[in-house]
Amino acid sequence: MQSPPASPEELVALEAQIDGWFERELAENSAIDAVERDIGDLVRWYVRLLGEEKDVWTAWFTLGQRTLRYETYVMPAPEENEGEFYAHLLRRNRKLTGLNLEIGEEEAIFLAGSVSFAAVTDRELDRILGSMWAAVELVFKPAMRIGFASRFNG
Image 1 (spheres, rainbow, N blue to C red):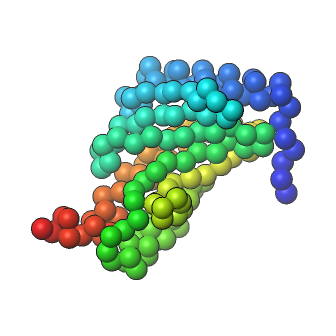
Image 2 (cartoon, rainbow, N blue to C red; image 1 turned 120 degrees about the vertical axis):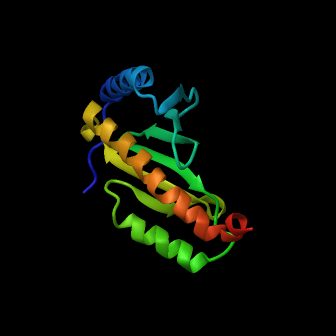
Image 3 (cartoon, helix red, strand yellow; image 1 turned 180 degrees about the vertical axis):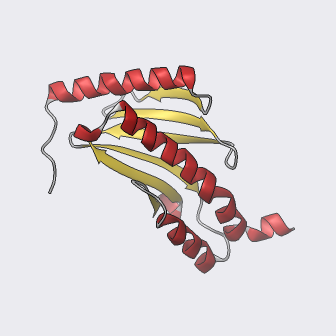
């Protein structure tokens, strides 16, 4: 069952809450390198993160009337070993909570999820960002070694 849409007032309050959370996290969380806001039609935040397995990546948080959607580009489509590559991602998908590995534009691999606007709290934002960071760290290097094996073995 779909949740009802947020009122304009609820969306403004949630937007301010998320702005504040990102501001605090930028100051305190060394994994966050930068946070920018989209000034277009969408209410969207771009969060530049520093990883270990994948050095730098960006997560997008988009606030809609019913949900907060979050996603990141993980990697391009594989050049080789497609069966093994996708099997690896499907096995990793089973271990994710609140996130899914997905095939997106140009067959690229994305990590994405969403929560109801009513479920967005500072604690939930912590969980989402931490889960995204951990999933990228877990998936990226092994998937690259499978899907682009000849680049690593040559």
